Amino acid sequence: MNKIITYFLIFTCIISKALGQDTINVFPIEHYDQNIDNWISPASPNYDKPLVSADYQEQRLADFYRHYYSDADDDLSPWSKDYVNKELVKGSGKGIINYESQIITNFYLHDGKQNRAPYALNYRPYTYQQFQNIANNMDFDDQMTFAYVSENRAIAIDNLDLRALPTTEPLFYNHNIAGEGYPFDNLQTAAVFTGMPLYVVKESKDKIWSLVVSSDAIGWVKTAGIIRVNEPFIKKWLNAANHGLVAMTKEQAITDTKKINYGVAYNGNTLPLTTETDDDYKVLIPVRGNNGYASTKEVILSKKHSTKMPMQLTPHNMIGIIKNQIGKPYGWGSQLFDYDCSAETKALFTPFGFYLPRNSQDQAEAGNKVAILDKLSSQEREAYLLKNGHGFMTLVQIPGHVLLYLGNYPNPNSQNHEMVPLSYQNIWGLRTAANDSRSIIGGAVILPLLSAYPENSSLLSFFNSEYRPKFRLIYLDNESDNKLD
Image (tube, rainbow, N blue to C red):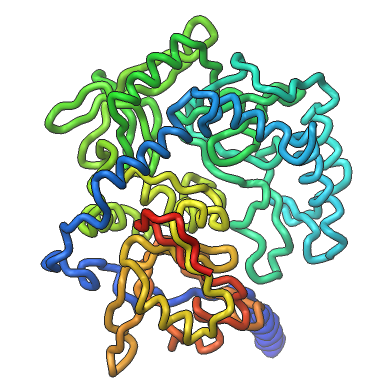
């Protein structure tokens, strides 16, 4: 009996020590009301007031078309000659090879830092041979053309992971380091949705993977999930898109009139419109044709979970989409087709006709005015946002993260109920000043931006100027070209 007690005490000590060194804990998000109607009343006089003019939305929609539904040489689509040529030779005459080769080199050498040593799913360090196998499969010794070739245009016929290297195996850094390990697979770049245009640079040696240029990034996708396009397909596809676009406001199944399933349409995905009824939209999806090229299939989407673009940009309509997303899990690089911070904001603004870049750092490019507040103190940053933020139309950018400012509302954790900025964001967790742990939120949430969180005083405020060197406001509703210094 004494031995059992002794073993139990030893086991308890070991577990306690392990828990004491844990780099994660769970943030009590239940302390913050996730019913957005309790923050922003549907009875508000501005609830259905447009946040931007119809003309401005049409301008933004035209820009969206340039990225996803154009084959004009000077546009920004993977079917556009100038855009593809720029991506192929970025940085040098063989830029895309140098870019891909550097990815492997960086991971293998891990910048000489032990905390950057790469680990596989089984917690084993990646070996030189593993990287060599991947490099061999990339097959860059094969002849490549570093100029646009129209026959290399393609389209996604399935929802796909865009990977930094041609492998499904994840690559993590040490999980004992705060902010590393699952879910941060460093090879996961983004998601490519059904119907997205692509340009095929080359196939891997085993033909399983294709290196592609998308509207948002470069990476590897499964070859089975894409198909080449020819001029007849492109003409039909773009003609339908010019008739109208439909954007998903909530994840839904794609079915035809016979109820046959053709996959899933995720929030923020768009497809060309053909016709509509009172309840449904009929849209086109690409499928594999008998001639080796893409063909079209007409399918049905419920109007309950989709909208013709651009949806009028009002608080009411944006809140409707937010309600569909609140509580959904965080997905780094859109793994499992969940969203991270920038994927969330990108998908949120798509139904309204806004193109936002995929990366949080690049989303400043979507703002016609950017307030650069890097040099302000924590208190000054908060005061500036409270005074100058535009509800629903201002993104807040800090290092490695972006969120949407919704407006100013009473602080629920204060007896004085002073006004604080309210945010909508998809976030993994809050970090400490020592950067030794994360308080995990792990999804899309409504969260007030407080100068300190009473649950844990060591958690960094989003305004913190000591540990967050960047703090910028991206105004999406300002039609001027001015940048604030």
